Image 1 (tube, rainbow, N blue to C red):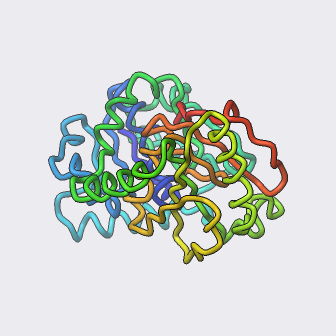
Image 2 (cartoon, helix red, strand yellow; image 1 turned 30 degrees about the vertical axis):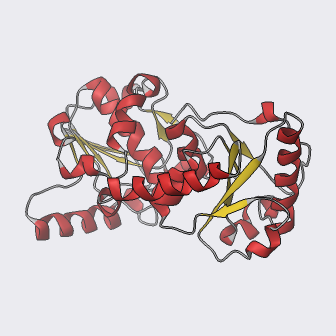
Length: 296
């Protein structure tokens, strides 16, 4: 049995993190407890039907809510990187703790098909870290992941309305993810883009498609307030919805641009939409630069 003890950021991070464990669990036939997705499970009907439980994959430790709540808190803080226990590997006969503390700090991924995992999966194995990955099985189980993480009908209804609005006046829908916040300092501000930079890249892309006789509509998604007047030079639709509607609207676009983010990466993976990471340095854009995210 494997118990994941790392709470991996927000929605995009957790979708990728959880998905790696799902495909590895299915491929290697072990019980998986992933206790840190419950706050997002409400968006996906697959979890309501407890279908994952039939695959031996669980979001909780117990059906008793209070017991499950306190167990999750214990796991979350006991294995936290700030504590000694969260940084080291410990083997206690039938219980094994395996941490990626140092790998995560150095951006080194760990293959879930490695011997540390596979040879110990019949123990109680606690895995702590962000960069656990299973690239071997992602392609095989990709259709299943898209079934698991299909949004509820109420979200699909809003998504379809947004995309229909985009396609009313455009031949090509380009999703634009505007994210700033902590990007002011991340990677020396390379991905902290103001509206002028976004507009510049949008105009370059618009020109590429106009040369092919196609009109663009840009679908703007952001978790911050956007002044749409700054984008009046191009045809835009502003989603301005909840995070699920925004993410999966991007997954129905024809292309996506934005700074590096698991939010847009998941949209690309789920919808097989070509994605281009943009920054404040490179202005030259080729349509061939867009790539679909295929690996988890």
